[in-house]
Image 1 (cartoon, rainbow, N blue to C red):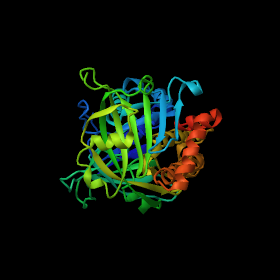
Image 2 (image 1 turned 90 degrees about the horizontal axis):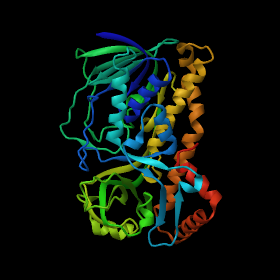
Image 3 (image 1 turned 60 degrees about the horizontal axis):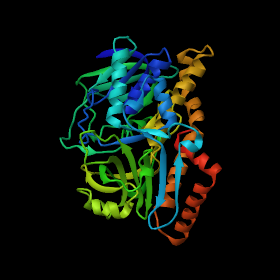
Length: 441
């Protein structure tokens, strides 16, 4: 049995987990280890038919923070200059533009695999030979010992894939095809890591968090999300294409969002590709083996243009899953802390802010002369205090939007349309919501 010792262990080699490791290495002098069941390697992007169809709209705060970590996301995707919000079969609509808040962009749309590759490239090129990072690929965290007033002892075992079938999952903290895993019996390949702090970045499914004392809660929204890339071959209104526009369309079954993505230069027949998330009811989900472009056109309208092509759709249930609590020396980041409904596109951006506050908590305590051992004993409490307001506000706002914009009751639809019209006309309210969209706390 091998024995290793590092300052911080990150359980989960997801995008958020890898980004956390990079932030620790770039912005502190601490050592870090990553535990990941699947091989941490460069993901493959194959044109529009990527094995991972997920895209994320990085808010301006996330773009700025990634730049601090030497990741220029403008090399990975187009900027969003405006967001158009509309309500199906109603007149309410509004546009939020970067020009109105005097910024060059509201955010940047990137493929999650491309972003993960860039983070992985930075980790390997800068730090793999530095002696400050250990990567336990093909291993799973089996158990955590918590000796009193002492570092944690983590017991790892070799990963085993017990399910040859893959499960599609749009959790932005896990691979898009996620095999099932199990805990192995003693006698298999294993090792022990001693660490002051343990960060969970393993999505919402891992049972170890609840075993340690985190409280798990789940709210089922009764909706399913459909993820695919769609293209238009005819542009309806140029004001929605130059500058590039992200669309949010509210329907009686839930929102339909389109994010502009790079259109290959050799595909002249397509004017623009979009990453689509379409929220549907449970009754509708059986009909989504492929995208019905005529139905999409009927639901969305013609602002984006005429839909002419799509990639294979992936369907997944929409739930709010949270892991809450103050467990000594342990915290949860990203979807391991909160997996949100995609209605406002804030899940990944909230995870980035989790990382920022985790690093800030470390820096602020260490700067006052405390050792990491002294910081670790109160770290989860201090971190929770920093994160409480941002998390609760974002979760509450997102959940409220689902309730308000996912039904067609006459009174509710009237109020939300009046709200959209007011938002469009009032520059002060518009500026506030635009800043929220940009990820400003």
